[in-house]
Image 1 (cartoon, rainbow, N blue to C red):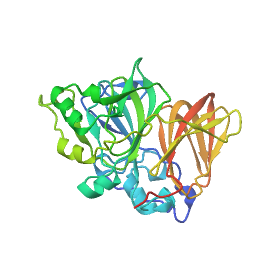
Image 2 (image 1 turned 180 degrees about the vertical axis):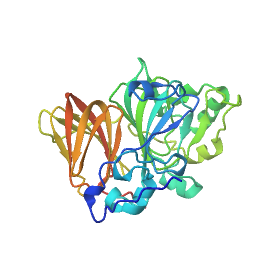
Image 3 (image 1 turned 45 degrees about the horizontal axis):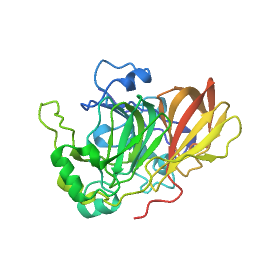
Image 4 (image 1 turned 90 degrees about the vertical axis):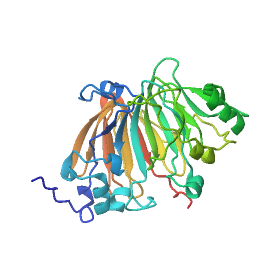
Length: 345
């Protein structure tokens, strides 16, 4: 009989709650490809890997720790035991992981979608979802759709659905590796073909599919759409910038740091490392670390881990210090944390 290993006591010894690595949870949506496996050298059987849920506490895609004293424990269990030692003082709920972090490979374009924001979720139901896409790789000419073209109203939008000329109402945004696209709740969007990206989002799986480009699912039938729900939550006057503008942050040369974007739900930094750097969560927020390029060795009180490109690590808020030594060729890391202020209720 399989038995769950006894849990460490992180409250008694914060160092016991070291960086966490998880078994990815894969999704085989029809638009996916195989770049998650090939680009990041993951030993996977042949198949479609549209998404890899890297850090998730959702019941339908739960992360399970693979390394260290917490191996075999789900992220939900770890948080239940460790609370704010895991999540930090900025977490709105000490028992709930507030984000979902995933890789997406769009061999084909995704459906046109929208998610509710906090206000529309409270009014109409569902879970609010603001997200951001960081482009890891992109085919020549790759793009995404984010927002409506200026002046498009509901009547024109519904006419485009009936005619199938949906590109005429969507704002197309060319993308290249290193770009980031911000998608707040209420913004109509679709990832076009040829993108490999890291997505950070609120912990939500509410998606209202609007248009699927005439595609059919595995069963040969058109996939379900949710037009009535979508029309209630779309921000028709949405005109805010889509592509983010990275801002330099202090760093010791030759290293560089940038703030990719910060919103009420998450902040993402990019670190270009050529020499050692240190990370100190200070009890404020967990840090989700993704190795975008190169590799690095992580060292902390009580352990060490070698991480190559494509590895995701959850750094608990209670960890006093994490030293990061890049490989000889350097490393590019993406660091996701909670913002200084909690979202408004």
